[in-house]
Length: 126
Image (cartoon, rainbow, N blue to C red; front, side, top):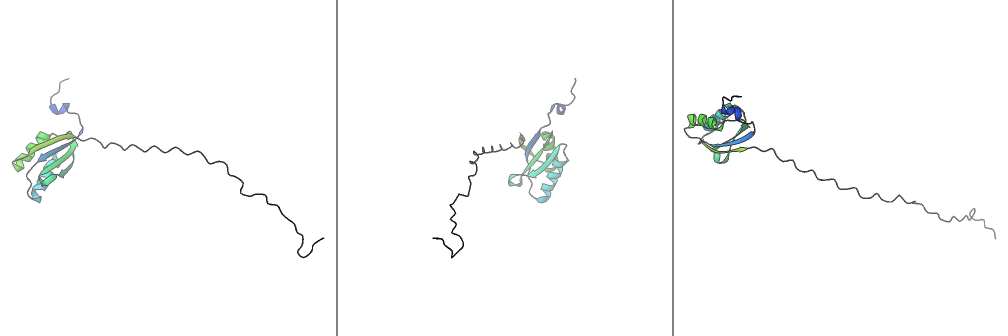
């Protein structure tokens, strides 16, 4: 198997590329973002710290080619970092607390009380 391009060897992983570009105005930011979005594999672009960094996230993005494209327009573009984007770790679900032992069976609420029959009122036998 003959590989003709180095890009064929790149495994597609989400990566975050940070490129320092001098963007002094909103127009310059807009141009830089348009150039970055036009690259193949880019899924999101945002402006980073101090308004002079572009943060590009995507799969299989060629960071060197992206920097060259930005240099054509801005005369300066420096790759700060290229990192793999790791998916957020799922939070471990709290284990449900074991159910306490069931309460004892219900006790009878009523009690037997002696009943004294005095007969009809006003009538007593002696």
